[in-house]
Image (cartoon, rainbow, N blue to C red):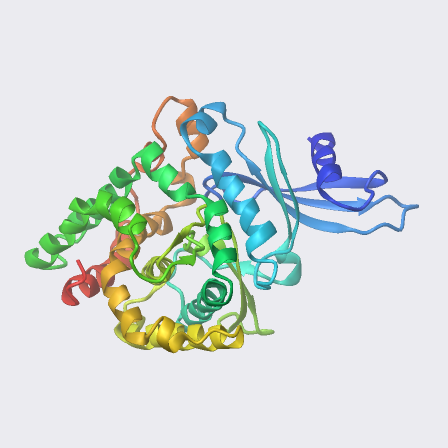
Length: 391
């Protein structure tokens, strides 16, 4: 394995690494990366060599041939490589990408190891605090403003980037019938909350199940509002936070990970997917404030890039779009609640599922032991969607 890694890195890194040693530090937990394998690697100069030391994260395609044949994972890596190489060189709050490698059977992205700089993942068992919510929302506003500035100042460049990006998310939806996967999650929540919420509320929530295919395909593809390049992988394992010294609840920076599902559509997709997946029952009462944080930061960053948001994307249009596209976030977060309530011994490797001849979606067809945690993450979002007539 060390020889193979050194071969990959020799092709990717610009520096001469012939006199370096490869130290594999281990893998993350199985649920930290569902679609890829992650390796932590240190590349250190030998004793007589004064070369540079690299502390790296290697994001690699899974080796399962069945998984590669039944999912568009190669296209997912292609999208992520494009994002790192072409879209976000100016966007600082992502890991440094040292390079990429793509062959017929191997796809690798070499990133800096953010843990060395003090970044950590959030514990998925808990909702984000309001400070975490605001920090990520502000970061999404900053990222989305790049698309807005391009559309206003260089629309041809934005079109070129959008055309090259492709639509891996849509390919996953069609190849693996993700409408069934997310619809199943909606029904699980419906059944879990019987006795906790009234029947009218649950019946309205269940309509989301009936709309799953429309939301994932027609609604997303036929976006008639503002279009931006999306992150589209908005659950907690794709954010790493750095904290003020000695204060674990005061995040000062966030770095966004995993761009494999990146595509173009309404910014509400990122915003609703992220917020619903992580918001607490207390903070959801202040949704209008959170949306205002996003819009004001979007306006600020767009202005700094020479783009006037007032006429291009008025606030009322933003709020109208929220009501129209928020169903996407409610649908996606329905599965996230299950993942966040899943214990480590319940996690199934999606590649193993493919190797056994089953569909990708079957990797998530298990019953969660901690049903209370599942319910507690979903209940207030169901109420919010129904009470605000968003379904």
